[in-house]
Length: 192
Image 1 (spheres, helix red, strand yellow):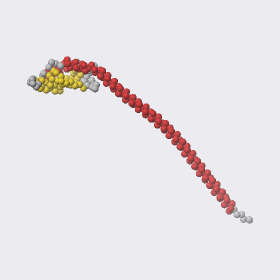
Image 2 (cartoon, rainbow, N blue to C red):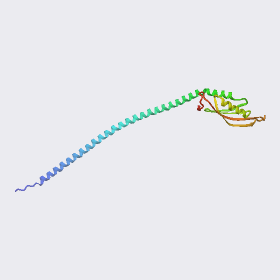
Image 3 (tube, helix red, strand yellow):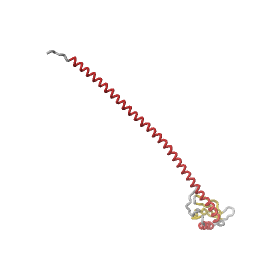
Image 4 (tube, one colour):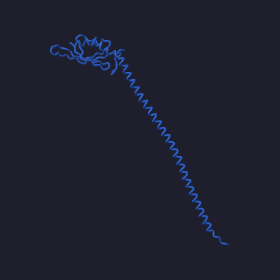
């Protein structure tokens, strides 16, 4: 039988397979790179789209924050105006009360009693004065207690002193009382 040498043919077959394998490997690498690039492009596109949505949302949120701030400013301004209106209303209601206070104090002062000071805080009134005697201070307190505009007299201090030059005696006093408001309650608030 004749001898056939198959080594060159096998060698050529092996080289062809290596070439085909190299081409297939290069194609796979190119395909893998293409897939990675397309995936990256798709993700970048999705990220850019989401970032534009986020930017739009941030702009809308900033606009709403401005609106909320304006509403808060308007609420604060409204509260200030309501407070001013309340103060004006209280002043309007209490305007005749000071007239009643001075009128009633002038009516209730007995002869021989003179005021040197008057202080008011809300419905609390402090009278400072001089009387010819401590009995005149007692008469003042009885008159205040019987008054329709004044109530709850309370003596804080009565001191008997001698007047310089004349040698006569007098009683210096401090009396606290409450002023009743026009509607009859004595819980008036300080309007200032």
